[in-house]
Length: 398
Image (tube, rainbow, N blue to C red):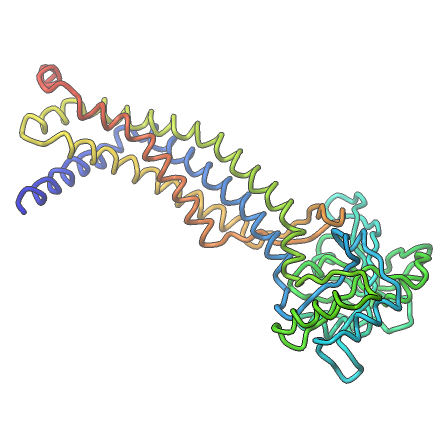
């Protein structure tokens, strides 16, 4: 028992000497801290963009929400349904029912141009024509300003994200739809991708864009989440329909996958390149530490301190500096980027989607792990060098 305790005391003593000597080499330590903090800050901030994008795409999804598209369609843009088909879908077994019938909303999806608030340049904004059951199908949707549009009128309501990112999107304003300008009568929020959209009566939108009596998708609410198999089976077995059903969560996850992968890859690549520089900074810091403590380490070795305690103490010092830098970088990323609102291209619909960066605890932990890895790599070689210092030659410097 005395052996392990004695070894731990040696590690503590050598580590203490190392930490107390930091003021003597403050410049290199600060450079290492800044480098590691930068790596962690960039990594966490970029990955928080992907996390926020994913949360926005799937944040409002409910297990009883389903979208129905034409078979073979990859999204709403390349789907097409006639009114007769949407009625058959609404009459399918397994749907929830409201006071006015099945909770099924036949919807039309178009793209309009609106100027971005930040730059003034036009961007593609999704506009959705919905059916009377849309507000019940999306149970989380709430009006936060103004009122809902009236059915049969050229009126629109806009999502909170779109109102934040695009100019002129306030209650009382007007936007161009087709050849005319339609008044904005309300702002709504659902907490998901719909917050980036403009909504109106599907019938009025059909007329504005000469879409006849066609739709692109039907959004439905199931009687229970367990009704999905019954609903899907009934659609598949109906010879009058050539459609497919997807849970809305699965549909939105698939739509967000391309952008999420792109952002994550970019974030890891940039942070990886920066990490190489941070590793060299950590190596420089720890080599300076070993050089400054050559006589001290040799003296301790002569007094009976083992090589293992020297290696571990140098590693602990390197990890301490790295983790402190990682915590600083993670904290800056959280303060600056968590909840920061932005918009980007949704490649599934080639339209803008508004979202908020999300710096989650998992990302903060990941950033600190990266910092610890940098510290480990930056400390291992100087630690080995310290353990191999020739005691006799080092003592001659005394």
